[in-house]
Amino acid sequence: HIAGWATCGFYKRGVSVLSSLSILFPTRIKVVEHEYASREEYRSWLIEKGFRDEVQDSRAHSHTSSPFVWTAKRATAKPLSKDVIDFVGGCDDTMEFCRKFCEPKAVEEDVGGVTMVDDGYSPDHEFDYDLVVIGGGSGGLAASKEAVKQGATKVAVLDFVKPSPKGSTWGLGGTCVNVGCIPKKMMHNAAIIKETIEADSAAFGLSTGESKATHSWENMRTNVQNHIKGLNFKYRVNLRENSVTYLNKLGTFKDQHTLTVVDKKGRASEITAARFLVAVGGRPTTLDCEGGELAISSDDIFSLEKSPGKTLCVGASYISLECAGFLAGLGYDTTVAVRSILLRGFDRECADKIGSSM
Image 1: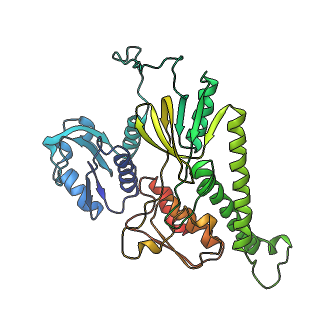
Image 2: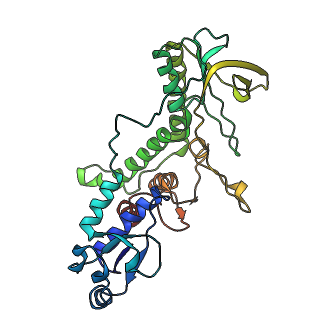
């Protein structure tokens, strides 16, 4: 429970940090706000009506500032002194409470009998592979190469990209390389260069004439995709150099040790392995509304042959804002549709700063 008056910066900071914790740990923390319209109303409740005096902790009896924070048995809308478990304190005490809450707990030597479970693996098995990693992204590629370093002699990576609803596909490397971090950073850099030329070139004695810097989406897209294809090839070579077999096939479990795999031509076969590691990552959620099939996603934007032009980015988390950022920087009319707040679950001060910048 946190109480304070509406315009108090310390109260708002406390609410922001505690709310962030409640999002990260929804089963452990529930934040109840008791917000008063003015300082006078808050002090009347706290001091004149005597709520602080009803709390057993003597520190609470002399507390006059905002916020007033405590833990309680129930999440009641009305503050009830009989439910108070512990008095936390003011803003500084609340920040310390949050830090301690997030600190790693010391692990005792006796871990309560937790042991590795024998899965029946035997080095002299008769399966095709010691390990098959399903997914050729950052995690899958790293795991397959590490398995070889740890002694596995027969390791394979299974990677297959189902086309997006708009038909976009890509090569080995996963989201980050193909439709995530790499192309996003390159296009973001293009936007920064364009904005820097327009904003700062004259101050450094550089003349661009009366017109603003022009941008060719087609040229940028071609160069970005060529760079990605180079990375796809390097990943394949790197797997071969580390004695990892690359299978560009879609896998479905048949039983505990068998996969049915289908290549891009639809030809099916079976492979077996002593162990499997699933590292398939995730894909964007399509819009479930009338006309949703007309939208593209982050799986498509980096390979668009023509510029998207005027764009609406639906969603307010970081992928949507990153795309909106480089599109706006490149000069496209860009709007972000926000259901409630920007960057839910992120640090609120940072999120508010980004909102102000937008």
